[in-house]
Image (cartoon, rainbow, N blue to C red; front, side):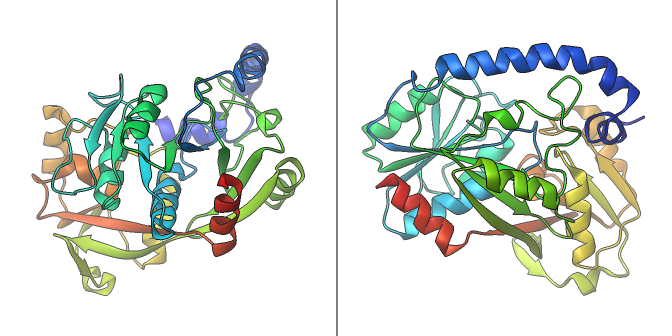
Length: 342
């Protein structure tokens, strides 16, 4: 059983294994409750306004594209914005390093996939990589930023924040409802307070969980819905017509938390494929074994995410197709965030 099938059987659904692990989940949940109660409100308080974007699940909710869209929206409203990425599994994960001053031509290659993806999208917005969020905030203060967006920081309680945005995939939501190791959650619904803004994230072809939607509306201080769509396919920095690929041999190549949403996005554009090369989230593609496997793939094109592309270029540029995901924030959400910051 591959990792995706295992997750679907035991983490997204309830199985014999998940019930066996449930007592361990209760212990973990108790620890997380005590931790949150003990640390909340006691972390570093920055002179900058701070927005944390996070989730309760282990991944796949769409935090990074939403964080990027929010950074761009606040910049358009005249704010000086800095973006902080955890840099998971990167050479710069420890500490806090300025990897971009807002210029796409000067991005550190040692940053993680999500940090590089963000830096490429955030023109004129500085990007910091590393899990030391206190240090990131101090760097932002030195740069005299108005607001700092902390991507993947809901569980990082060593810094205080003005806003907590909690992102939920509208379909997969809470998985089987258990916290790890029996389920998909870092924390349960009890972590949501009236200080949180819950975001119900609709991805391409999602079937929304209406019961979860109602729970979020009841528990959160505010509730909004966001839509993401796969609007284009990029090849060598040029947008191409999906119809031109109908006679081509295409394989999917991805290392993300939820490959299902990627498949749905491809289907929404009429893309068909013959094979899949699916790896773990934040997959390191530098090993000879994995690169040889990709080179040997019998396909005209390899369809991947923007997050994966940063680790596959330039070697596979000729065969690489990037499925672009566009995330749309509503004006009421942006207005509400700005009002909360004031």
